Length: 266
Ligand SMILES: C[S@@+](CC[C@H](N)C(=O)[O-])C[C@H]1O[C@@H](n2cnc3c(N)ncnc32)[C@H](O)[C@@H]1O
Image: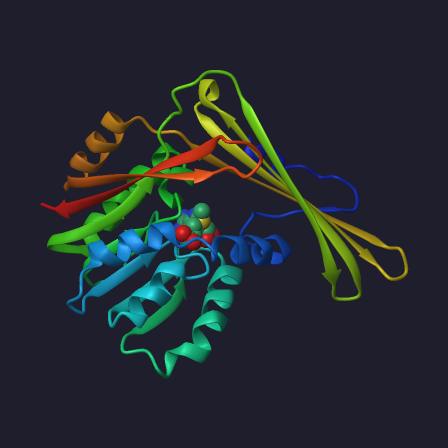
């Protein structure tokens, strides 16, 4: 589905990923407000200063917090826009923090930094946005970058225990550089299709009436717990602990559920 949307050629409409350009800025400010998973990662990373790799770091939520806790973090993302924004958010704090962050672009499915880390974080459901081959390749990359006995902190979205589909919408408007803009976000949970699809649509209306449209989509594949444990095990990662987190969807009393996992490199 994501590939179909990104392959569209609609006149006057720019199709981007959710992590680039205008939508990258909106996604970045949205996700940066989420703290519930950061608290778990902070606790699992421990107090002793560690070498940490934040893979698929986005705007660097985990990396910035962990460096502020005194860890030494390397943060990698495919999107130059995400890395640029992460660097900007870190810039003012870097001088006072006891730890450090080095941000860089890179592909998690084939990364080779030539060094090993004590902890690797792959959060915000990043593994679940990759297809099966991408996820398996990334797990191999993770194991290669983890010291023996090192810790992987990752997460996944289990298939909901209800059938049918649920759709939630959120829309907002705001001033843009030379006019105004509005964005509609929608999330469709579809257990029978094995995935959750998020769409973002924006219109930026200039003072002269010109309209620019932007369209993005992202798919999060639901994963069954036994599959996750098996894939991790095959990559040399033993599951030690899991925590289930529920986030309200905002429009009714339903919620998104995801599971955070702590593993040891064996
Ligand atoms: C769902 S976001 C999560 C971002 C961040 N971990 C967080 O929790 O805020 C997924 C991120 O993975 C990045 N990404 C997607 N494919 C990637 C790849 N192959 N290698 C590195 N980063 C990738 C995207 O650019 C995006 O920033």
